Image (cartoon, rainbow, N blue to C red; front, side, top):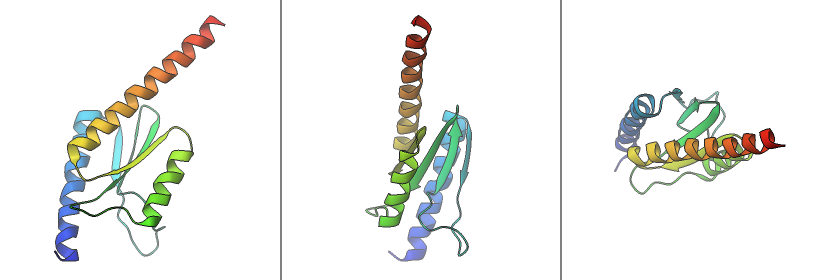
Amino acid sequence: MTKRTMSKKESYLQKKVLKKLKTEVGGFWTNIHGGPFQRKGLPDIIGTVEGYFIAIELKVGNNEPTEIQEETLRRIKEEGKAFAFWSTDADRVIRRVKKYIERRKKAESRKHGKRNRA
């Protein structure tokens, strides 16, 4: 498969994921268009939902993130209330984002419950 064909497929996947995120998850989402004046390795899609920052790198077929993309995702995760991952499937992206938000809400609820009892 040529680079151009892969690019079209990844572009289609990005559009599909963005549409699903906006309709099924809510929040603010945008895709990042790489360019010569931009830092290398930035994820394809970034967004915020209920105060959480989420970064998603999308790949098609058997492609995997480059070393710099992996490093960028790792650094984003290290910063705290952030979730960063890569995927090849739109439905899996939605499930992972929903699960992350649910886990964070539960953790914060437990944290606030302990604080209120003190």
